[in-house]
Amino acid sequence: MAKESSFDVVSTVDMQEVDNAFQQSKKELAQRYDLKDSGSKIDFDKAGGKITVSAPSDFVANQVIDIVGSKLVKRGVDLGSVKWSGPQSASGGTVVRIGDIVEGIDKETCSKINKDIKAQKFKVKVQIEGDHLRVSSPSRDTLQDVIAFLKEQDYGQPLQYTNYR
Picture 1 (cartoon, helix red, strand yellow):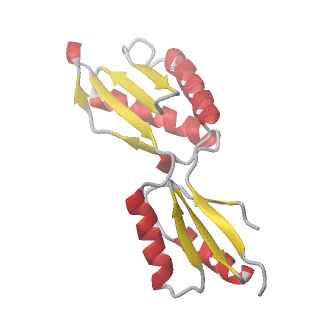
Picture 2: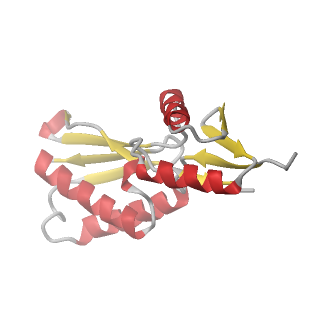
Picture 3: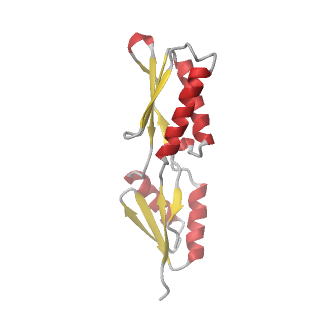
């Protein structure tokens, strides 16, 4: 029997690039004339994977989020990997928005990907291994078809395909 080929479906974010985008956003926030004295600020918790935006109004908070988003895109971080909460009122009449950085694939999404692959009747084996999936098959062409199929789908977070062998 031929040796099986496989690849992993993962969802990872380079936290150093997120930190770099945060630093650039912080610098732009301090320099932009329309936001300089607005009282807006942003914080980044690298360990917790959270970006916190505090602003005097929801409109200004959205402007700051747009700045962060543009810096993330320039640094090569997919915007789908940041899930922003709704506006929350804070003390002093300010609005706080929290962006959670999504890393890893949760169990529900893993099982949904697994069901979608099985529904297409690809001749592959799918194993859920924690926060990623391993897809294996004797045919490399079939694996490439699975990757092409998954790229067309939207699971609410960016997916990468690693360890292709």
